[in-house]
Amino acid sequence: MLTHTFAHFPGVTLAREAELWDDGYFCWDDLIAKANSGGGLGGPGDGVTDEAIRSRQRLAAGDAGFFRERLPSSARWRAYPEFIDGAAFLDIETTGLSPGYSYTTLVGILDGDGYTAYLRGDNLDDLPEALLKYDLVVTFNGASFDLPFLRREFQASEEPDAEDLFARAVHIDLRYPLRQAGYTGGLKRIEKRTGLGRSSALSKLGGADAVTLWKMAGEGEPGAIETLVRYNAEDVASLPDLARLAYDMLSSRLPFSVPPAPRFPDYDTESLPYDSSLVEYLARFS
Image (cartoon, rainbow, N blue to C red):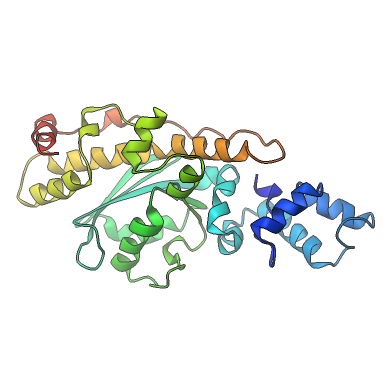
């Protein structure tokens, strides 16, 4: 899908992109071929053709940062298949809703090697360096929640559009492509509507319970940290299937055909322990 995208060209809006598709320019190679043959929008050296050539070169080089800087946020979902091999699915847990008076307790990342929990007081400080290896970072509501917390945690830029922690990665916040696909609400609501996501006892818990689990862990409650990690892992484990659903639904609406998104390796959260008595206790108040 990325090779069909012109919205990252300077001066090309989504509306102008749609016009190019209507005129039969469906991909970068169409622009290049027609320009070289003397037709199309111009000859070699015109701005649009140069951008098509540059985009083809940067994609061949695996330069996710090039597209990160240029893609409008509403079109970033299109980069999903091209950079899925270097993807990280990310979700955080915190002590509250605002980075102004709360802090990050856990960052969970699912990548091609499996799930890793970055815990405050343990290995959380390793996160910025770990993020540098990814070409794609996928979150749910990350633009409004996860990224501001992580910027505050690691003193990154506070500019609204800055994503310093993902210096070379395209960030896809699934909340928005899923909304375009017709799915609104929180992550668990969307999981329920789509039939994707967790089916374990931890599905009874919510964000407030994650806050309580962290507090209980600080008070020495056995099993609290393990249960918090398992809760977080189930959040991130559902993101690849939701990303694939959003991509396939949105790409099916376009005036050309593209292959479905590749399937990311499944991660079985059943291998992670949790304290069932804590889950039942918390579920009574949820």
